[in-house]
Picture 1 (tube, rainbow, N blue to C red):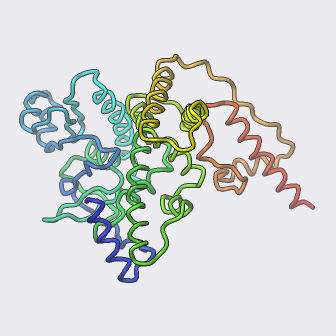
Picture 2: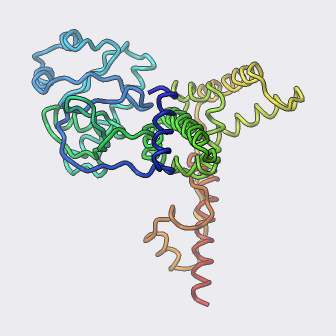
Length: 364
């Protein structure tokens, strides 16, 4: 859907009194997998063609060749998916082949889990025409279901009554906090959600309401202000997402620091108050050179994570019995560099101090 079309729909909704666009109606129901379609505009979309259970069984038994299936399903530069098989139909060793291979590895692992126990979080879908549905969130989970059970099976889905207006925002909300998602996918999803909310902000203005504030952007995306700032900086220059797409594995916090340092040095050198389009292009090129160097550098031997000393057994009890991510310890968990032993050690120390200070206060 174009931005203009979305804006018209949002204006209509807001004029009907839906000032805050409250939650869309949904229910949980069983749906046959062959009625579900992936969303090709989703940042995590793996270009797939689904094969019948009969053809999948024929392939796994060695009765049908890869070339036969590629011709039947027109699968050049795609991945064939069926019960018990993933077939990558891309040039071996290419960037797309490597991305597909990494994604499939994690999907197969999830599929094995599904075979032995139920899927905890159902994929979300919304209705299309002729009784079909499109995935909103949960592409990886859906592909794992196909691999584990086949296209002829049914599974539980979270089904929206109508297509949500803010699809990209919902996708980002459900996926941003997950640690297993590729960094490139997160950056692309953030950009899509931000553009969608910018359209909502414009629509609000047209009906006499105020634009969304930065805080409201972050709240609607379901992330902290610190995480919102991280994403904003990382998506400022296209080369960052491109580097992650091509294999960069550096933490967001480290790359954000690199971006700000290069950008700040450029502004200081040229004594600028505002960056022009050409200025941003030059900065983008400089950042790209730096990130390419980081990709090619062999990883150093990691240091050790230091566990701060603990003075009370009650602290240990709290650590093991509580979800420390929910403690009001003043820590921005989205900004923690989990690959930096010192950063992790500092966080552990802060959590322990917070718990011990709380225990001391409750004992007084």
